[in-house]
Image 1: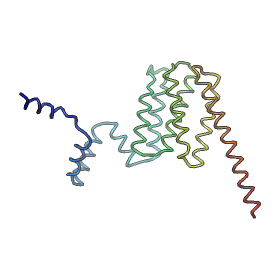
Image 2 (image 1 turned 30 degrees about the vertical axis):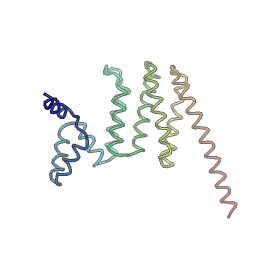
Image 3 (image 1 turned 45 degrees about the horizontal axis):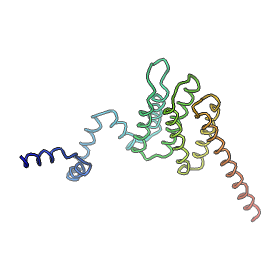
Image 4 (image 1 turned 60 degrees about the horizontal axis):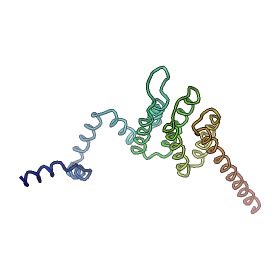
Length: 206
């Protein structure tokens, strides 16, 4: 009886990545390519991930952008529900597939822009909904330091533009947009003053 219980316990032990890794290490090149082909054909999600990883292009990012937009701001006549989790999953999938920080920021901005615009136009949303939008904006803010100067300025401008909805949306979200815009505008002013002083110092040195 005890032996049978032990065998059942062993059978119920959850498989882990280490179990898969051990199997993969025994595969040759053709075996690995065959496995990837099987995974590619198994689901649309796998195909999308593999294309993002191995054939990166503007078209791949655009596909993810469309998925995010359709999830957070579905056509009002489609009767499709808002699916913030699906949009977040798409961004996570893109990040894991590509490691492209700028692309992820683009998708997060699409997330908040599309959702904010639709909410301002037709209403809706609750505390959980607006909390999710605020979290995405904070994620963008944290990622700004990892962008190059041009990308950072473009992202900041888009965040500031969201403040135009500040007086159109309740739940504290409108106030949040106004606060973010004020913070970023103040930061831009400090940076401009710093660049001006640097240029003046360079010219004086000449």
